[in-house]
Length: 134
Image 1 (cartoon, rainbow, N blue to C red):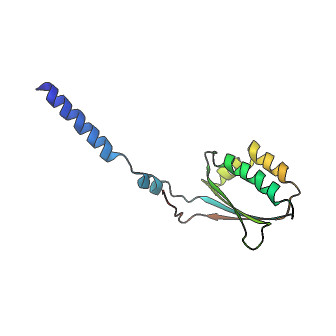
Image 2 (tube, rainbow, N blue to C red):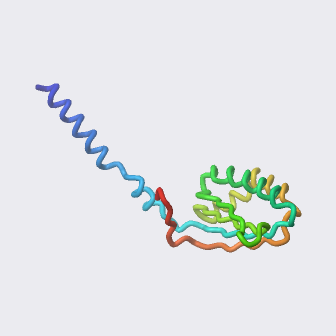
Image 3 (spheres, rainbow, N blue to C red):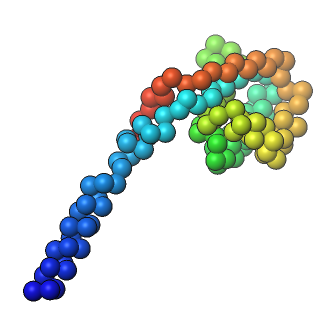
């Protein structure tokens, strides 16, 4: 009799724990910002786009491993293959500042020095980020 009560109690605890665990959507809702968004545009010197993108991709792959960097997307204009847009999402301004102090960012900046003719940064605060999985 005592064994049956113990098994029933354990099962009840397991079901309660499963019901109370937050779902993935609930976690995303609880962490929805506002985040710091940087839209960075570059005009790359003709003939340097492959070298620039290689360094940028390496930096981006390392950046998203930082605790405060949510995403770093790289795009190239359909009309101008030497025009690059980087879309960065950080937890806050402190995370963006920490990113700029990393060794991989410093390596990227050194590797791409002289490869661009224009750099323009626009910063925003997120209102809503909509993507699959959130």
